[in-house]
Image (cartoon, rainbow, N blue to C red; front, side, top):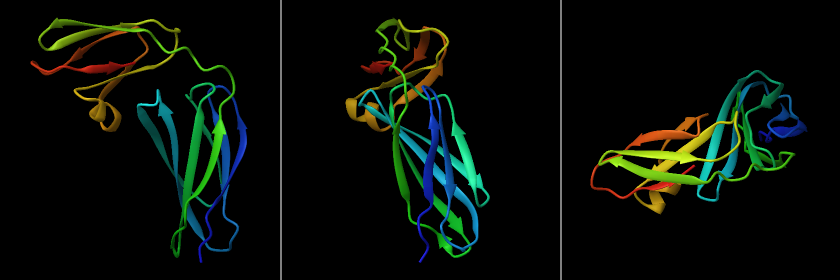
Length: 163
């Protein structure tokens, strides 16, 4: 039986998490697959995947959001096959940024100008879709460090926007 890997949180801050991965077995490990999940504004679950080579590993994941719950799951790739998943949960320190205040205005039938307020020197995600279900499951999206963006849309559709 292949055991799940041990995920140990080494440290965390407002914008990063450091963790180590190891196996408590003599089975040869060729690497790990790690998923980091978080929920964006209760509408959209985000995921970042890391593929890590080697037996032991300490990883640092940066560009995270302050005071946000993260779930880290990992499995090991071994000579006998893949291990079961293991999970840990951690909440980054600090104060979560205030949600931006969004304004969307149609420029013409295929372009919408989005603008918002919020802190400088951060990356914003713009998500848009024609229904709440699509906004949750598979929205169109882009990122920017600016406080406005022009989004191209299909004519004769109503859209929901989230920043």
